Length: 290
Image 1 (cartoon, helix red, strand yellow):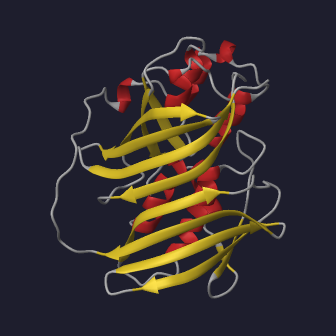
Image 2 (cartoon, rainbow, N blue to C red):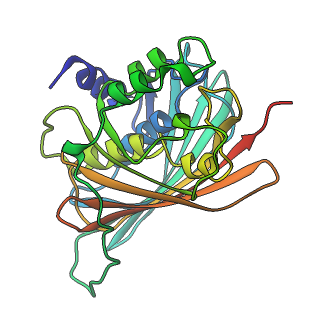
Image 3 (cartoon, helix red, strand yellow):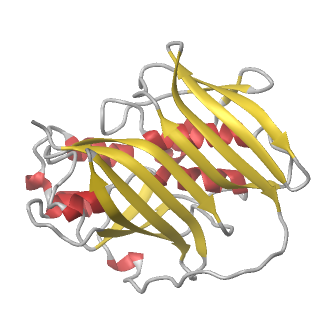
């Protein structure tokens, strides 16, 4: 593993402070607040460490309540809602400076056989044919109006190899396009065989680009271009089939609606061999500066 991935794994390795309490570090992100994907992943790690062995995360539902302070630790309190024969439910509240900033409900299931069907995976170019994040940012460096945005974005995504199928929102602001964005991603290194770790890393990455289709629909370049401001409001994920975060995953994202200063993103994540692994939905604040 590279240094960036080591740092990310260390960030997500929340410290146990009590039987059902944990403490997580924070760090800066592209925006001057804690990255939402970090809080989702840390809370899911905390919940997972109180779950009976052999039960895998199958869904999470989360709300972002306040902006996180990157200069302060985050306390995670886990509530054991239920341990049933097949399912385990946990609720996690994240607190900073004495106030809740986030809460998450997660469900875990013991493996069982069942009916099996899925939607088909879209046909897209393979990741090896696409620009890396560094190459894409270099190509469009003249688009950014926010100082040091490209450098901060590179640092924030250093542990993730993320490649757009087609142009990202910042490539051509002012030109409305179909509200759909596809990216390939994987973490940049080989991981141990820990299912919870892989799920948590995918949750971390899932918050990076899910509102891009909202920007595309309106020809907005995004946070680095300075023509919108935004933040995640809520986040939901359903984990259908096993996956590995160190293998290529296709993130197919679209936006069916934006209104009232909010935009909705919904997505599916496929493994490279065509298995539908995850469904994701997120609503976020998307405002035009006045």
